[in-house]
Structure formats: C-alpha cells, structure tokens
Image (cartoon, rainbow, N blue to C red; front, side):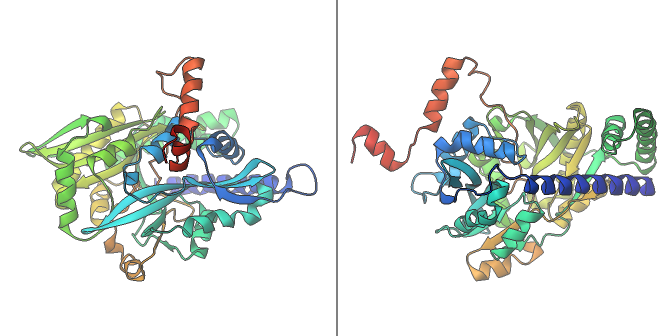
Length: 446
C-alpha cells in the first residue's frame, strides 16, 4: 500500500503544480488592456472597500469574505476591547479609483507563560498581476505597525513565505508543521477524488476508483488505521461553540501555568468569537472531556466540503488537554474520529501540535501528505523573544493560530436576512464608517 500511496500522491502533486504554474504564466501574460497602467497608491483599508476587495479576491482566485464577517473580525474582536490600540483593518492599493491590491490585518492576543503579547496576523494577500511589483508595499505597511509584539502569518503560500522572510520573519520551528496526518473515513469517495485529479478517461477513472478504494480499505483493515478507545473514567460530550462556558476559562488558566509556551488566547469569549462565523458554510463542533465533572480537555472539529472536488474533510482545529494527558488526548481523538464519521466526512486531518501530542495521533497509523511549503511564519519585535521562539519547545502551534481556521467560506448574509430590503439596510449599517472621527461628525460630539 505504501508504494500505491506514494505513486498516487506524486502524480497528483505533479499535476497540481503544473496547473498552478500554467495559470500563473497565463495571468502574467494577460495584463489589463493598454500598454500603460495607472500608478497605485497605498492607503489604509476602509469598511466601504468591502465590495472592491471581494471583487479583487475573486479575480485572484480567493474566496471572497462575507460582509457580516468583516463586522465580526474588526468590530467584535475580543482583542480590540476598549482601551486597546486602534489598528487598521488592512491596507489597499488603489489605482484610478479601483482597488488593485489588499492585505487584511487581524488583531490577536497571545501568551507566553504569564506574558501577554499583542499580535497581528496577515490575511488575504492579493494583488492584480500588473501591480505585483508594488505589492510589497502592503507587506511593508503590515510590518511597520506600532505597538505590536508579534507578527504572524499562518496560511502562507510559498510566494508569501518568501515575502515574510524578506521582512525578517522566521519559519515556525515546530517539527512537521508542514506535514498533515490524515485518516480515510470513506475509501470510495476519497479514491474518486484522487482519480479525478489525474484527468483519466471515464473508463479508466471508474477502474482506478474501484481499485484505489479496495486498496485503501484493505490497507486500513490490515494496518488498523483508526483509534481504539479504552475504558476509563473520562466522560466525553459534544457542544456547539456558542455553548462554550466558564469551565473553559479554568482549563485555559491552568494550561498557561503548566510551562511557558506560546499560545493564542483561548478564553471562552475568544473561542466563541473564533468559531462562530456568520453564515458559515461548514460546521464546527466542540468535544469536551470531563473527569469527575471537571473539564480536563476539549477538541474543536471543523468540517468543510471542498467546492472543487466535493471531498468533505474534518480537521482538528484546536485541542487542549490538561498536562497533555495521553488518556485525555486519546479520549478526545477517538471521539473526534467517531464524530467525523457521523458527520459524513470522507477524511479526518491533523496539522501541527507539539510532538508529544502529535505522537498520540500517530499511534493510529495515519497517512501523511506534505504541504508545498511551510505555511507559518512569525516575527517578534523583542529580539530576546524572537530568540526564545526559535526553540521548537516554545510553541503550541496548531490551526487555531492566526487566520488558518478563523476565516472560512460563508454565505453573504445569515439566513435571517432573506429579504432585499433587510439585506440592503444591514449592508449599509455594516459598511458605515465607525471610526471615532466619523462618530463625532455624525453625532456632533467633540
């Protein structure tokens, strides 16, 4: 089975990379009509840029965000509580009144031991091809921000990673973050998605899918590629993100006291904000593990359907266990596996987490796939902290960090905003400038 997996994986990666290269060359060879282009100017992004940014993202092959989610990210973010530093929501490049470049800027709060860190994560870096040469000015604006302790980028493609390195960021030192562990829950749809990417004839596709599904099913049984639960005193339950309560605060405070590691903040308010995405097309569920009624661990499982191939994936978006207790981790992982199957997912994935936590997952013989490049870069403004973070043991990095699971495909409006009249009114309210200066102008308060 190992050789079969390797050959399929190699063929798919070669095909995908070839397509990406061709698409990139095509985009570069077809600039906007006319030999001359208008000069682009850099400025801070405004809420009123939403539609222009959405159109830019679509041109760049990035899923556009929802208006309601902009409200969530930059007006309901717990890291932007009253009294904190006001920051731009991002920056745009503007040429002849059109937005031709964008980089979002999301405020976060991180902790290293008892030290609170003000952090920002980049999001949605996209520039029209004719303006790629001046696109670096967006990154320069991001790294020029004041009152920031830590800059992170957690969903960077290879080109963005090179830009991060140019601004003296460093790749995450946590081992194997670029290697995704995964388990096949439904062999036939998974094999079908692999064969589809090879662009075979219909007859060969059917044969390849059948052979692949049989090989995967056989290998799964022979190697026992699934978790085995064991009897214990641990009780596991499932809740929605909105049901996250005060007991999560106690677990979070206890986790910070264990030993110094860099954590993205996980207060109940932050967890709810992170996973309650307006109009979310996917689904996030929280699996809780309790011992004698006390919360000793949790896992958040995100399930999304790939719009290109229809493959439904569940991902361990976050997982915390008291003292990284192996029994708690096994109980959570086993419950996450069962939940993913019940949710109808075809694959369950794990990315990141420290080696000790990751080893628990590896005990159940996952397949592996390597990302084209490291997606996680960081830069601390304090040289001593930067040196400290160069040690892999200083991290607890996972998809909860940065924007990796914070931004997900969503509908343009919640189901409750069905009529055009209500949607138009709501859009106007969300796009309204609510900066202090604008509020003073509207209300007459000085």
